[in-house]
Image 1 (cartoon, rainbow, N blue to C red):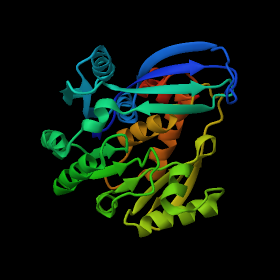
Image 2 (image 1 turned 60 degrees about the vertical axis):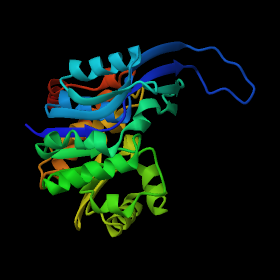
Image 3 (image 1 turned 180 degrees about the vertical axis):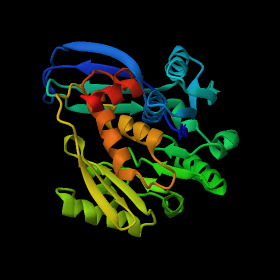
Image 4 (image 1 turned 45 degrees about the vertical axis):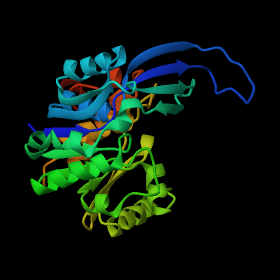
Length: 306
């Protein structure tokens, strides 16, 4: 069983569903509204835990009902929340997900307490980081906290996984130097490298550019097409499973969490781990909501036997 620590965000998601996005100045009725747990960090931690990893979370919530709700989402999925701090100066993070009838989504985020996570908060979890096989982080919490977490992981000779989302053009060189595996989607890859991802050739070029920035191992996820991986000079492409997507909100997060649950620390099974993660992601997009859609190990294995 892999041991995984996730440093990241916790958001309460409000999902607004409608037939199509309104034009400027236009008013349209909703076809549905729901609330679910979310946040890229929490999604990835819950995915890792449900896929079988012993998982610990580092983050921050408010002293509000939303914070209590998010802690229940973690613990109900078996995630250790002892390193989730509380703040009385900001509200728990929130996201508003706009979802049309074709399952295209647009997301607005209020960072709240996620933006208050500090390097000192991360240092309190040093024991958990040192005991983990992988430390995962994203960009919904301050970069300084992530740098400190990755420093602690490398000091303990542990592997780090960076999901550079939401996309940003300015990633500190020191963070990339501490990253063992980077997992952007095609949009994030273009933002980081300037290379537009259209085919496998452009994926190779994008991955090589990321390697030139200091990250030896790369996975580029390309939604319904699948995922490209590069480990050193080796590379491959794993097609996605063909399913009817209902909500793609947590697809990438499910992929990363599931990947971390089966990936070997030397990344020698990267191709097989990507296939497993693709299968988990294909199950997630068939249900509504971020965390409610994340599959268990039993569901992932059963889909593999089908």
